[in-house]
Structures are given as structure tokens and as C-alpha cells.
Length: 372
Image 1: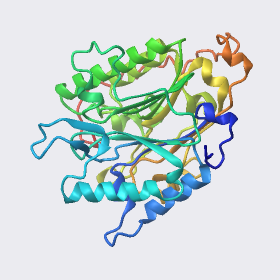
Image 2: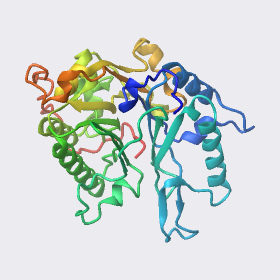
Image 3: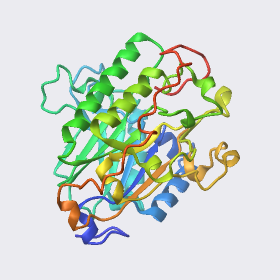
Image 4: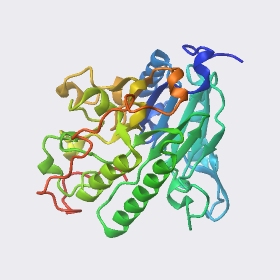
């Protein structure tokens, strides 16, 4: 079997390096009107070639699922791109061209696509890696949910790759929105992801990554928390549930585990929202997994905030979200056993932080509108 650059035979059992990015519409970032590669496409290709991550996890690819027919009533194949009609055929051609070129041809592509040109997730995995034992597009554990795929699969929000010792869970979490229906939808999502992560607690490591659409702490928004009171992604219920998810599943924010209270942002506002910033994208790992964290960084960490605010092409690739990177140490002999208490980091005050009392749950304000 051919080995992708930077991957050894020993590394090939499970992924050790990750690239995570919300594309905010992938194909429109990749092409110009004249059909030539865009600056964003060239910057993305350069970043992937330089890093050679084992896994490339994308959200909001905005590719329509195949099938469904003209009226959309038929069966859809959420694993494949649609080519029905000129727009979708062009989108598919652009993606196939990208995937067929260097360095992306070194990767196998997996999709979970929505029934419309919205949302959608994609995971590219180095061909050198051992194939996953399971690829799933739902958070359902046993198929007993009344309608487990309404959010996960039909909206293209979940793409799960399971290996012998680890699960890679790429998600585009529903935005909280500004009405009770959206709040209920987000609350249901949070319940189901907590149930999923808790199910695997102590059984198998889960790396949960993607646009999680929650700025967990006060330092995860700028210029000030007061400007985000009631804003989706920063409401009291969302943040409390996020804390509960981490606590119940005994998982931690990888960036905070390595960098403490260093301030960084993954989303930057444009237009009327220019100057606003939120940290919405994460790598979440089990607490007993922290000793394996080699590095975790936001692509803008090397810049000061004034530069990052301008959304440099080498970090954002034309999106309103920048990329994140994670690298892991290989498993050692002790990882084959049940992790000991000395391997696990202690819970700290950051994990248990509660929301500021001044904020009112779901109080609507018109400061910023994130893409749902």
C-alpha cells in the first residue's frame, strides 16, 4: 500500500494529526469565475501540503446530497455529491478536481451531505491509514431514536469515523438561533451528543472536533462579553449545557488544556459585525487523553489580533472561520491499559466555570447573526 507523505507504517493504525475548518461554502472558495483556482484554493492546498495532516475535517461544505429527484421527495444518498442540474454538476466537478490534485489525492473522502446546498460535512483521511472499521452519519447509539437522522444526516451535520481505539467525530452543531423552535432543536442536539460521548466514556477515546457553535467562556468572545448577551452561541443555556457535556463525559477542551487562558478566536465578523470575534471551533478529548496532546493551535495564533481581525488568507482561506490544528503523541505501552489517575489531568476551575449572572437566557439582541 502506498504511504502518504509524513506517515510511517507505525503511524498508520490511527490518525495522529488533524486539520479542522468551517469552509462556509467550500466550492465558492475554490474557484474563480474564469474557472482557475482561487487564492483561497491555493492557500488551502499549500497549508495541507505543508502540514500533511492525517485527517482533514470540514464543516459547511455546502454540497448537495445525491438523489431526491427534482421535487426532493426521493431517497437521498448523503454519502455522495449531487450532479442534478448545472449548479450541482459544477460543484461536483470542482470538488472532484480538487480531490484529484495534490495533496488531496493522497486522501480518501467521506461525506455527510444535506438535501439542499446548505450545511454538510466532509472528512478526508490519508490513504496510508488503516481503514476505519465504521463510518456513521448519526449520533444514534442503537437506532431506537424516533427520528435519529433528522438533524444528523439529513442536514449533513455528523460524520463519524471509528477505529480500533479511537472515534473521530466531526460535527457542525446547529446554531441556537433566535426563536423557541431553534432553541429546542439545539437543546435536543446537546442532549444527544452528551449521551453519545458519555456512552463511550472509559470504553473508547473520542476526538470531537468541528464547529461546535458555542463560545464557552467569557474570554471566548471579543471585544467584550456584554456585546454578546443573548447572542446565539453565547446564551446561558448553551454554555451551561456545554459545561455539562464536558463534565458528564469527562472530556476537556484540548486548546485550554495546553494553553490555559490564552485568548484566541476561530470566527471573525464581517460587515456590521466587523471587529467581533468568537471561539466556536474546538478539539474536545477525554481527560485521560490529555497526556497524548502534542500541540493544539488556532491558525491565527502566530499573528497579533490586529492582523487576525483582517482574516488572513493563509488562515481563513476565504471563510469567516479560521483553521485549527491538532497533533498527538503516539500511544505508549501504558495506553493499552486503563488510564491511571496520574495520567489524567485534574479538573480545574475553568472546567466548572458557570455563566455570568448578568446574562439572561436567550435574550434576543441584534448584534451579530451567525450562519445557521
